[in-house]
Length: 325
Image 1 (cartoon, one colour):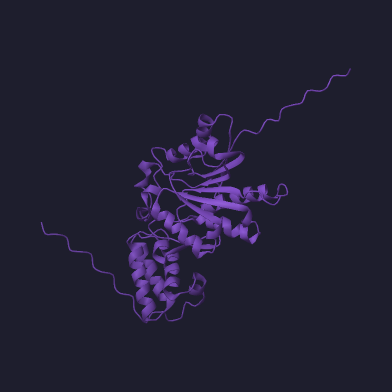
Image 2: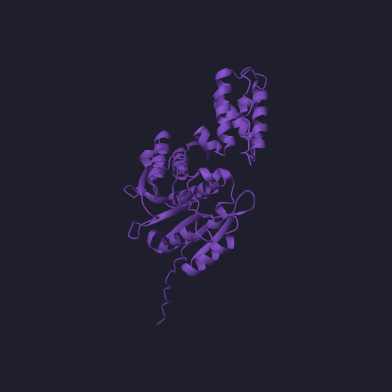
């Protein structure tokens, strides 16, 4: 039986086409390749090729793209049609108002993780403003466990700097991957916040470390068996940052076990979880940390996204009433 003929190469994009024509041709090609958001991807990559944002693409649809931009755009579309994520092609992803550099060394930051940043920022701010901080008070210690690109840590320092609070905080960004940690350092330097960050290569947080007031963690939480069925884009991202074991909670459980040793008595741990892990995380906290509190918060889509884990409230010893003589 003769071998099947190879698939014909796509017709090259015309160099004389307008921005709108190129976007339409690219969206059709991406749709045929199975991309989930072909039009949006085409617009973002057109902007990247032109050196403008997506608004610029939409605002000038009839402008000629030019032969150089058309060729660069076609190269981007070819990569996207093969499944490579847009964030890796462009080299960055917008996150919490920052352009975070991205590449295959770390998981691409997702919009839903911005909830973790918002809650961590609220927890830090509450602790810094609860009472006056006398001169010489040590900085509030915050950990970003599984920092990846450093998106969480960088966004926290940037937001605290706007509030003039960054000098009162030290954020330790931890990752087991040396490559991811290098990328996090690059993002910190690129955004001018490296002076408020410390980077540590390691597995979670070591017992014996000085306790933290706030612990943020976006650890792997995808069940092993589910990974191969996910969108093909994820095949370009490091499996180490995705695979959370049989039920997706292996790494999170390991961190929970360490919390009594690494979290301050009135501290809080904020853990990103999968949309189907609300009840399992509550059960895990109950089993591993009796008496601790666990509240699950939904994201904007109403799906479970964040577990807030706190130690039992401190018990203030009662003072017996003095008996009358």
